[in-house]
Length: 450
Image (cartoon, rainbow, N blue to C red; front, top):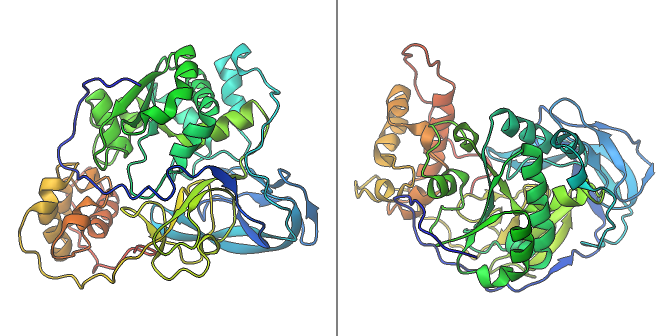
């Protein structure tokens, strides 16, 4: 890896790593389970139509639901019996969402990540053919995006993105799932990234990783050189792993408020997506599971596990007391009855004290000083409490990246992140062509938020 002088961002904080329990833990399959509730989508408005009936026996990797508009095909994670059409909770950017699901019972033993034979030469086909091949396989967009990966690729190609970034920073405490994938299956991840670059016809491809971990990634140096991928080691500073911040550091360009990184010609993808892409396109294996970090002081068993989709998050930390959360601790959602999906990178059972009741703002300015988007968070909090949406619009609420730094540093324990997120959503619904008098409803905690 190399380290060059790139851009920077103001604000942010240095977080404790808390990764010792899982950083060196190899990926192993989860133990046998009795029940899966496989979601048929990651939003209530776009889900796949079942192709199977209750009582039917299905094999691992068999298509059990066909994609409707805006959805993805769903494949059985394990061999089992279809018990019923039910509902399951999945974690989204807004909290917990209930979606249709297929309940599977009488399940086979999870096999984990097994070697596969190559069945498709992606380097011998045109970019258009490659983009078509990406469709199917149950692949969804990077991160928490509910879009099919095929739609994400089509959108990036239509926006004429000229830079593709593999985000391997993983700079939230406890989480090591992407790190272990790069250590153990780095060559496949790199080939998936190169495949994505070929489909998008992008020549500028960057791999951004934490400079503290680069000695563990020596196996990817050869494949990265072969495909012309520039390897960049960056210092750890939260929230550099958020696409908006990472893009600003690497390109010195900022995305417009309320927009995305594709608005400035950059596509950001994660390690898990590249790994799943390679195994589907080249080996024909659909996406039926992913690596999940299970950690925390209250977790009965810590490690990195290959988890089939549809497994109850609570089952991963059976017996642990609250709080149990999905994702990193800075922007996590309480698990509740949620099941694992392609967006589940961690399930944490933390030894966290009960939060103190919030007090009045003391005007210390820490939230504003540490905000990586350079927002006047204190003024936005005032706008929230007074219901002044036009004021929030002028203060740039739509530029919030939702990193959680403001709530983390607030000595008054105010739920600043949740409040600014609500403002961002409300401001986004305002008409843009004329002034509108609008008020903000009384604050309510985000569903599922810790």
